[in-house]
Length: 223
Image 1: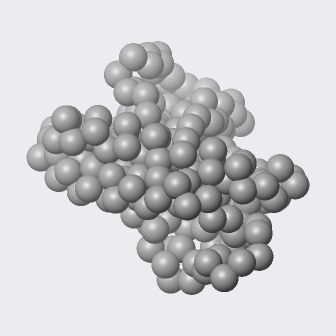
Image 2: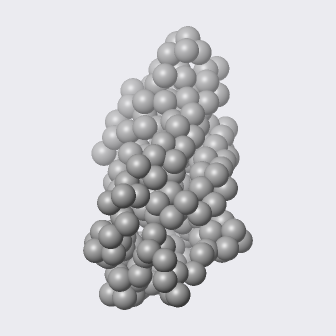
């Protein structure tokens, strides 16, 4: 869920709800899920770029949504309470994520420097293969500790407070993730006229490089 995934959930306080209706629990999960995911982050930036390139959008959206659903289910099922008690796991994920994000930041910076664009027909525009796109997407999801903090820890711990309605809460959070990624992946094509110009791609790739590098440094320091 990247997916802004930059803010710490520690500052977010949600009161436990011991009894509520399934509909209210679902709406609560949807609302909290949206508030966490709609932000600039590694995962969102990658989905946006694939949407602009019209490359494997359905597969990327499916992987991101399914991954979030699995992590939310783990959190609501109780892992959200247990994960903070095993800090070395998050430390390992932080270290691996920092290396991956820094590598991608360098690649994005190189694209910005070269000024290449998938929307401009030239000899240097090489399509991304489906395996490569899915591997990158999985890395952005599963090597990003902010995803675990948002889905497993925060959404999971809040979901557990809903008692018998925790799965309804989890369903709402999963629907928020699916809705966002579909809107981001397929809505990106509306910006294609703007990104038909190389300068727009150079700015986007430069911003992506800055975001990735910032996250990589923060993860490296935390690790």
